[in-house]
Length: 185
Length: 360
Image (tube, rainbow over all chains, first blue to last red; front, top):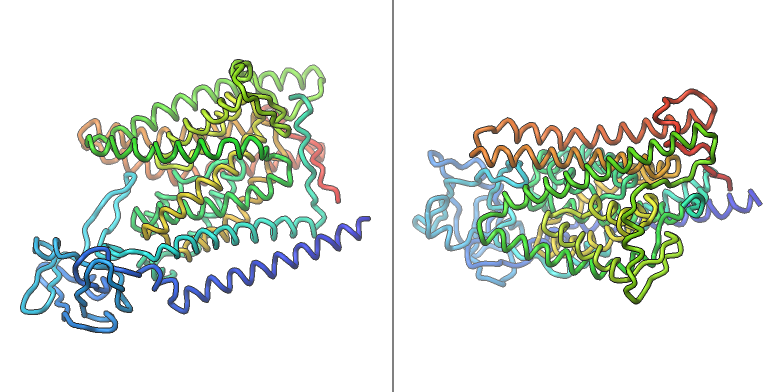
């Protein structure tokens, strides 16, 4: 009986171990191939300029960084691409500077066909904690299917890890019995 | 350090795993998501506030599943109770978010949020602690008289009041061994959902006392059943945050790797203790959370002159993860000693279960 239990436990553990490896491998591959990033930075949520905020994170009022505006396939480096709300974002985009911010001119301004960044980030607060809030993630729209993908994946990962751990303790011989809640209640 | 391409930050992945682990222990033991601890930790690691909330909520959904799987094995989940509450919880969460929006519109969101947190958690802390102390005394007395100790001892008379409400339809929760009006369960779901949505947390530390003191479930069942609710509310939050672009899934994966081990430990640890031990932990976490919200509120009401209070609340919020974990570890250690007939402190002995069955 004991051997039979151990055998079943081993099969259970191996099944969930393989499932966990497959789910993690798929998630990591989706991330490394850039698919997850493309789903995330999917469309512009406002009229403005698609940028990569890393290109100008050192900019200051004294030493501003200028971005060349053009019709580029990607925005790696000091480039910006004019986008309208709902249009697909070029490769390498991690934020959109909207026209309202550009028109205000206190953080970013237009100068001779170039976008000049002077204040790349500000300090903001959430739940009493301060953090650097830059142009990253701003005015972008994530592919709605990516939300569903996240939900399905987190469910799969949770199930795999939960049953993997249960299988592992079963293999070790710790088959936890149900607590008898009827006693003394 | 790991570069999170979606979040756009470099953060120490080891600390993410460690955070998942510690919050997993606490969450698995007292049935909370731990959002009030994780979001600040992620902000400290460099994630923007909105991203921290999204990653936290998504990880809570996954961790909830991991813990639920184990609590199901331990027989701590009442599926009828959990599923009866889901719709009410969802409705409540949505209304809570709208209520928060209304206060934001009035320009009172921070004061309202902190004030509500302090009042609610403070009241729950006082009630839970007083009732648990009474139960602890009762357990000690029973042990001294040589009587068999029950897994659960509760001295609250509130459950009898709510179970006596003759409102059809009545629901029979077999695992929880409770017969109660469906309306009471739905009401618990709605009220705890509103508070969770308004305060921006998973709601576990409100729902667990509600399940114990209103519905009349034992603490173990309340923890297991609440984790099912957390899976649903976490999944809803995950979907909303993901669509809004607040989730870096790789950060979630790191946290879940730690949470897998932590949640196992926390869930299994419930098998080694009696109900009041879990309620003590709940009371302590409520006290620390009240303090964590109360200090910034005092600073706010003083016109922002006492900035050190906010810094202190940061230390308390992050420190409580370690404190609660150490407390749970010490209880399991005492249970291990008690099982081998060795000395354990007098206060701990009645809180521990001496014959946990793990046979194949």
